[in-house]
Structure formats: C-alpha cells, structure tokens
Length: 204
Image (cartoon, rainbow, N blue to C red; front, side, top):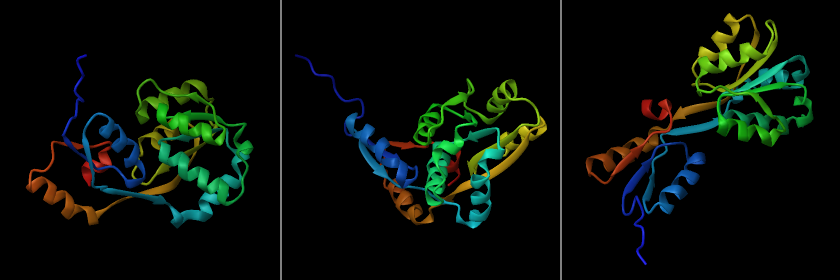
C-alpha cells in the first residue's frame, strides 16, 4: 500500500507567537512531519496597571448593553479577572455579545456567552458595521481588548453614537530576550519556514 508523505517532512518551522499560544501550533507542525522551533517574540500578561478601572467595569457590568471581545486572549484575561473578584458569569447573561471571529467566539463560551454579532470579515471596521445593524444608538458597550489592538473599533463605535468603555485587560510586550536566538537561526540558515500570526509578531 502506498504511503502519503507528510507535507512538512523534515522542514524546520519557526513559531514566533507568544509562548502560551505556541503549543497547539507546534503540535500541528509535528503531525505534518515538521520540526517546530519556538522563538516567542511576544509576551502576553494581565494588564495590572489599571486594576481599579477593570474591577469597576466588571462590578457594574449590569449597566452595559453589549460586550465586545477583539481576541481570544481578551476573553482569557477577562475570565481571570471575573474569577479574581468572584463575579459570577451569570452576571453577563443580559449582555448582547459580539466577537471579531470564530476562535474568539468559541473562547467566549467558557464564560457562558453566546455570540449573536460576528462579522463576515474578521476586521474592526466590519465588526463596527455588524454591531450598528443590531444595536440601537446610545447603547452602552464594553470593549475588551489588549494594549496593541487597533483603535478603529472603539473610534468607529463612538462615531456611531454609542457610549463606549475601552477596557484594556492584557498587555502584549516585545520579548527582546529571543532576538539573539532568532538572529542566529536566520544567519546560520537553520530555518525552512518562518511563521507570523499577527501584525505584532511582524513588528517585533
């Protein structure tokens, strides 16, 4: 019986995404026969510089009409803050939930949210359009994001007449410790592929 050769057999694939997110990607590369090499150019951590603002928004979640997540990371850290201050997931039940994409929507299920607004194209401008088609003007919207997220969504929603709270729950930081490792891989021509999963990793 003829065997099908693995598409990445023997290929060395560099993963530049954050350490917390690299494992699933590395497993997929290995299943395809490749050799994953990690050089996490980004570090993702909770935004503890504005805990008071975050706590205030979560404890007054009943005052919002809609909650928007721009990434799966946003959901993960939002959930950590809910757990930290023992705020029940049921307090989110009244909210209209919006998401930028499928992966984020799936993560939102972990806090009991069913997404009712999701754009056909996973960009901020299209998400703004989708929200404006479903939500009356002057509604109160809580946007959950990271520090490097584009301001287009918040700006667009405000321009549509919504009362928007822009809540940064996590920070993405350039991991300079990996720079020399990456430089050596490139100079010694040890890589077949370099992968980028966001504009942030390209910048880094």
